[in-house]
Amino acid sequence: MTSLEVLCTADIHIGRRPSRLPERFDPAEFSPRQAWTDLAATAVNRGVDAVVVAGDLVDSENWYAEAFGAVESVATTLAEAEIPLIVVAGNHDSEVLPDLADAIDHLKLLGRNGTWERHSLTSAGGDPLLHLDGWSFPDLYHNESPLATYDLSDEGVPRLGVVHADLSDENRYAPVDVDDLATSGHVAWVLGHLHVPGKRHDNPPVIYPGSLQPLDPSETGGHGAWVLSVGTDGTVDTEPLSSATLHYEEVGVSTTPEQNFHDIVDAAYERLRDVVTECGAETELLAVNLVVEGRTDAYTDLRSRQGELEQIEFKDDGISIRVIDVDIDTSPSIDLAERAGDDDPIGYLAGLLCALHGDEPIDPYQDVIEKAHASVRETHESNAYRELKNHDESYTRPTEAETRDVLRQQARQIADAFAEQQGVTADE
Ligand SMILES: [Mn+2]
Image (cartoon, rainbow, N blue to C red; front, side, top):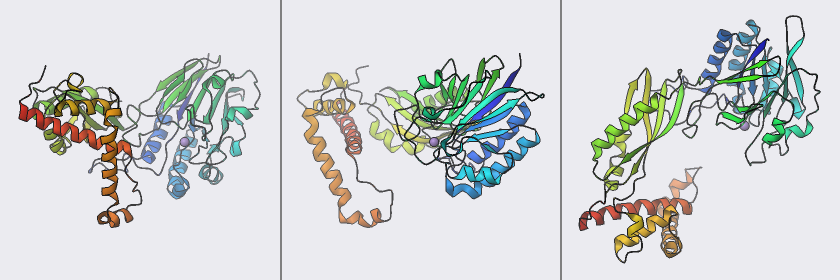
C-alpha cells in the first residue's frame, strides 16, 4: 500500500514576533517568519508529498509586504522540489491571502469566498490518491459552521479536510462541532485557529497543529508542524515534529517554611534541568515563567528578591534556559484553614486569604473588598496620574479581580509581619 506524507501547519502569523523574548536573543531569529522558512527545508529534506497550511499564515493585512517575500521564497523552494503548497485563509488573513495567491506562483489557495474546493494529489499516472478539501474564511468573522455548506462529492478516494475553524464555544470564528467533523467521511481533519496543538478526536484524527512557533508565554509546551501519513486505504498516522525553536513553560517551585532563598534558587535550577529534558530536538530557547509556591513566612522577602530570580540563566544540552517572569504565589506558614475565623488579626487575615482563594464564603469580607476597590479606583482617578493615563492607550480602570490580587499580596505581607512579631511557629 502506498501512503502519502502531508506536512501540516497553521497559525504561523507571519509579521508577529514572539513576546517577552529576553534581550540579547534576536527576535528575527525566533520569528514565525524564520520558522516558516525552516519549514520549507524540512519539507524538502523529508520529501513530503504536500505542505498544507490551515489558515492564519499571515498575521494581518499590515504585513502584506513582509509576508510577500517569505511566502514567495517558500513557494519557490517547494515548487523546485515538486511539492505542492496548499493553503486556506483564516480570520487573520482572509483579506491578505487571496491577494498573495493571485500574485505568487505555486501558492494554491483553496476555498476562496467561503466555498469548498478540492485539490487532488495524484500518482505518476495521474490517478487521484488523496483529495484535499479546503474552505477559506470569506471575512474577519464567520458565524456558521463551514461544514453546513460542504458540497464536494465522495469519489471513493481518501479525503483530507482543511479548514480554519473553532472547536471551542466561541461562535464568531467558524464554529464547528467535532462530531460533525468525525462523521463527515474524511479520513482526517487539519484545523487552524486554536494555537494549542493536539488531537481533538482520535479516529478519524482531527488535529490542531497549533501555532508553528509559540507567540507568547501563554503558548506553553512543544510546538511545530505535524506530519500526516495517509494510506490509500484511508488509514492515517499522525506525528508532531516539535520543530519550534522557542519553548515557553510555566514552572512551579515549591518551598517550605524551613527553606531560605538559596534553597529556592537551588530548587529552581533543579526543576529547570528536569523541564529542559522535555523540550523538542529543535528547541534553542526555553523561556520560563517561574512560579514559587508552597508555604513560607518569607513572602515579603521573596517579593523583594523577585528580580534576582529573574536573573536565572544557564545552558543545558545546547538549550538556553532563561527565566522571563517570576510569580511569588506562596501562602503563610500558618495553617490558614485552621486559623480562619479566630478572633484575632491572624484569624481575620487567614479567613480573608481563604475567601479570596475560594475556600471560604466571601460574604464576611465583601465589605473590605469593596472598600479596597473604591480606594484603588480613587487613587487611579486622582489628578496626579491624569497625564500618565493620557499617554497610555492601553490604560483601563482596575478591575475587581486586580484589587483582589492587591489584597492577597497585602494580606500575605501582614501575615508575615504578625507571624514574626508573635513568634508563630510553623506547623510542619
Ligand atoms: Mn485564527
